[in-house]
Length: 235
Image (cartoon, rainbow, N blue to C red; front, side, top):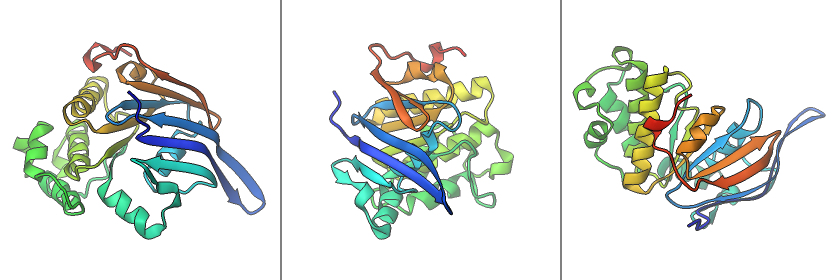
C-alpha cells in the first residue's frame, strides 16, 4: 500500500547560467510508499540524478513541493536540510567515496557518529558480510567490498531513506548482483525505503515500484505485481 511516504508535487528544476536556462525537471509528480524499493530508470540526462539530489536535500526546487514522511523538505532552510541529510538519509554512490586513510570499520563509525539513533558500526559491517575485513583500508578491499562498506556506512545512520545512485555501475556483473541482493534483502528485513537510480532496465524487475524518466518528466509510474529476487534477474 502506498502511504505517500515520498511525494513529489509538480516539481520543476531549472538551472540558469547567465541568460541560458536548462529545464532539468518539469511537472514531476509521483509518490513512493514506506518500505518500498523504487527503481527510477532512464537514459543519461533524463533527470534521474536531479531527482535524487533534490530528494537527498543536496539541491533545491525551482517550483513545486517534495515531502518526505509528512515534512516538506523543499521548504527547509539550509540548517534543516543539513540535519535532514545527516540523520534521515543514507547515500550510496557509484564510486564508493570512502576515506582512504580510515579502515572499513572507521569509515562506518564516522557516519554513525552523525546520527542520534545510529546502529553499532561493527554489527552493520557484519550484516553486510565484512566482519573479517573491518581492519582493512579501502585500498586493500575489492570494488564489491568497498561498495559493501559504503552501504554499511549508509545503514549505520539508521536512516528513513536509502538513496542509491547507480550503485553497481563500477562493479562487474556478479559483484553487482550481490550488491543489489544486499539492497533488496536490507529493504525487506528493515522496512527501509530504498530508491535506486539506474539506466539498466533489467533492474526494474527487483522493484516494488518503477518510475521511468525521460527529458526531465515522468513517462510512467508502475507497481510490479510480482517482484523478482535479484538472483533470478539476468542482463
